[in-house]
Amino acid sequence: MKWVVAAFVFFALFIGTLVFISVRQDIGLVSKDYYQDELKHSEKMAKQVNASQLSEQPQMTFENNSLKIVYPLFSTIEAGELKVQRPSDERLDQQFEIAARGGDSQSFELKVWEKGLYRVSLTLTMDGKEYYFEKLMVL
Figure 1 (cartoon, helix red, strand yellow):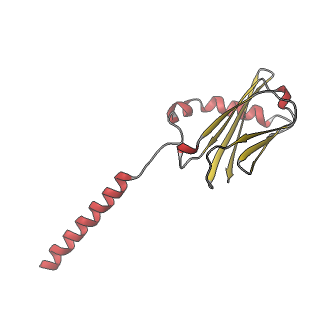
Figure 2: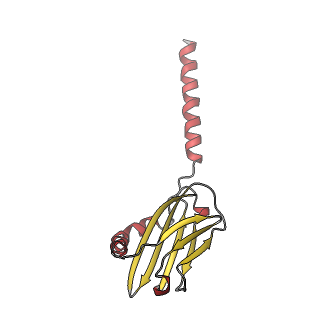
Figure 3: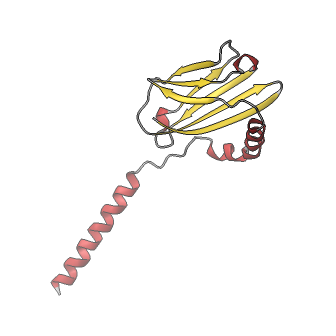
């Protein structure tokens, strides 16, 4: 009889420990405005279709402590935005503005970085049209 009671007590302690651990876990979303971002999904898809029709695609690579983008049409950019997001830790997210510049490459210094998976998204406006590029990268 006392083994049955002991088994119930250990089971209750086990369940209590699991609940305690699960309540303390951080379950952050990819962005704070996740739901509003998803409502704009069709706009994003249209920008991706525009991007797929370009003859030249930007090439993104990590080099040292920076993200390098090689794109021959940088001089035709009207406006642009680069987002580097770490899905597992929003404190490592960074955002940069891109302006028209001569040359075919731009580098962006990553102030805080850790090894792992990053989602890099690039939004460009050229000739009145918007383009969206996204790449999953491992640092």
